[in-house]
Length: 260
Figure 1 (cartoon, helix red, strand yellow):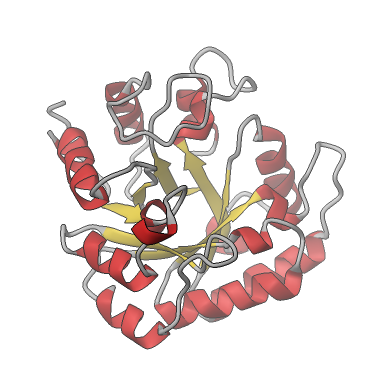
Figure 2 (cartoon, helix red, strand yellow):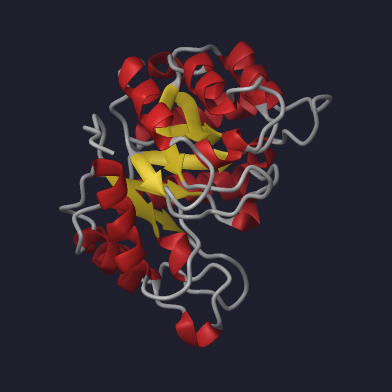
């Protein structure tokens, strides 16, 4: 692509156990080792459900990730609902792991439909608690979720330096959204350029949330990278890929594609 990235790349450990048979799954620690072995930042998950690998040794995991370009934590599926105490646990874990960002889905803040009325004072308290341990909250877009991002920014404020809450744009989710015109990825990135602190990078074929490697779907990655350069984005970009086989090799090919 002859693109010069202006931001560091990383990968999510989720792909090492999402939709894989139990015998194919590895521990979060082993997944982090695989990711750091190719020089990427790491996005950690606590677990993906009953029986899935979890974070069992925080100190060892922190050591493995110590040389990574960045570390972030994605809230577990257990907390994809409004659970302030559970989110406080996630914040504490993020701090203990040395993560600088905690990524939340809108449901984690009580945002289910446009008529939802989230507990804004409680969300402010969570953001304040996260700041105290060196973590910033990033609210991720789902499919057709501009309303949720706008509601939170309108309620809390739109300067992450003041609110300690910014936006994570998931490029794959933006691509299958119908609420952002004919160029949804560009429109999501430009609309939230002032709040953008985190990226999720994966591809799809314009219909489902496939989580394909960049270049394997229909997304115009030249357009994406040009837009990110134009808005001067320099934060983390996390590859969130669901793939069988050797995921480290898949990730390396994705990195080569984006940097090529």
